[in-house]
Length: 196
View 1: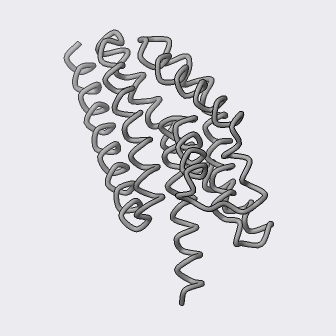
View 2 (view 1 turned 180 degrees about the horizontal axis):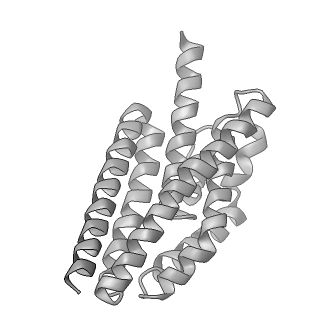
C-alpha cells in the first residue's frame, strides 16, 4: 500500500510540476532546487544537480528575466513563442526527476507525455489568452496576466510538492477556470465580429 501511495505521489508531482512549467519555465525548477537545497524535498542522486549552487543561480537569473520580460506588452508574446519548446523540455525534465522510482523506459514515456500534453497544453492555452488580450486591450492587460501566471506557477509548485492530492485538485480547477475564460473570450470575439 505504501509503495502504491509513493508511486501515486510521484505521478501527481510529475503532473503538477509539468503544469507549473506551462505557466512559467524557470519558477518550478528554481523552487524545486531551492527546496532541495533546504532539504525539504528528496531527489534521486542522478537528479540532485538541480540543487547545485550554479544551477540555482542560473535558474534564478533566468526566472528574473522571464518574469520581467513578461511584464512588457508584446515582448511577452514574443517570449511565449520562444518559450513553448523550452517549457515542454522543462516540464519533461521535472517530470522525469519525480518518476525515478519507475523503470527508465516507463519513466521517460510518462515524462515526455506529461511534458508535451500537460506543459504544452497549459502553455498553448496561456499563449492564446495573452494573444487575445493583446488584440482586445492592445497589450495593456498583459502584465496583469503575467503576474497571475507567475503566482499560479509558484502556487502550483509549492502545493503539489507539499500537498500532492490538493495540488492535483487545484490544477484541475485552474484548468477548468482557464477553459471557461478562454471560451468566454472566444464567444465575445465572435459576437464582436457579428456586430461589425
